[in-house]
Length: 192
Image (cartoon, rainbow, N blue to C red; front, top):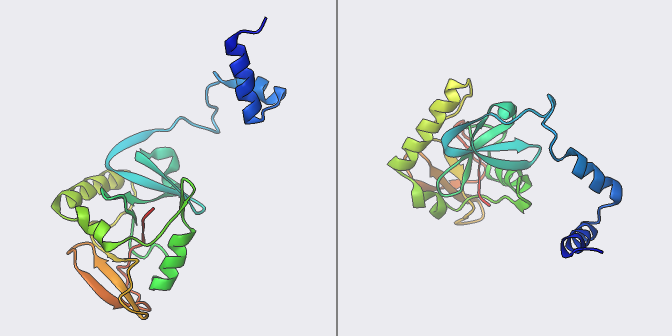
């Protein structure tokens, strides 16, 4: 006689389209500890969440995963905008190149876009700068380079065909700039 629990379990397995072998493997391995090839995450908490990049896929963790230092890409600001750890993180930083790069990025299946400067300015200021500096100190303690609260970020909004807005992170100034401009302090930023 089947119980209600068994009927529900069978229905669930059927909806997952699992065969008997997959179900058996899951059942037998659910209490297996991670092996040396899959070490337990060792996460050091940071004031601002950190962004990891594998290919074009981004993930966000509440701290520094020492097992994924080579995947560390950026920092999530309080407003949700993700900024690269360092200025000049891609070879060419004109508006069109940065936009193509940003559009290729994915987070939880969503496509990235250039940030709106209003979003950045919503939390811009001393408190966010302090949180970023504290986060960077933790990274530096672990031999990871990161730029402070500075750099030029291209924004989505275009006042005309040949220019787009730039926000200077250090000052909060929003300035229309020619799209073909490239500077050494350009910093990639993405919003989802």
